[in-house]
Image (tube, rainbow, N blue to C red):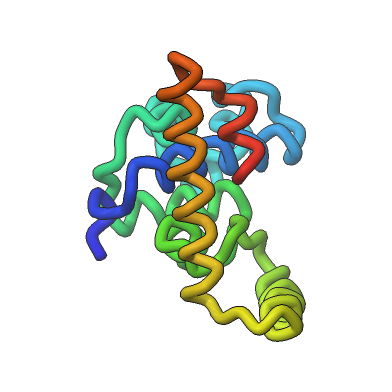
Length: 146
């Protein structure tokens, strides 16, 4: 699937997840993050701002890889997150243990990966409907479903 083919809500969740990751890494601003992480191949600060704020969704694979390296993510973490394969961005070295925990939790509830994707899509649809009913977007509520 090409990067721009992922749902808009997936890109919104990705932006929030990357912003959260940057802050947890100790960088309050994108500029500070870029200054520290450019040696790791981070794209320029403008690109980082655009992905964090969901202002652009047409990133090529090379740019996504550079973003993954800069944020200390597993290889292909972004595309796996956008596709709904995993519910969180996988930090380098965490995927094996997290994947095992998720598989066990899903299996204990009789769920498979597609069930989890379906639930995620349903949650996002409900958030969109709530936004319409309430007359506007409630980003705090919406972002809690990330």
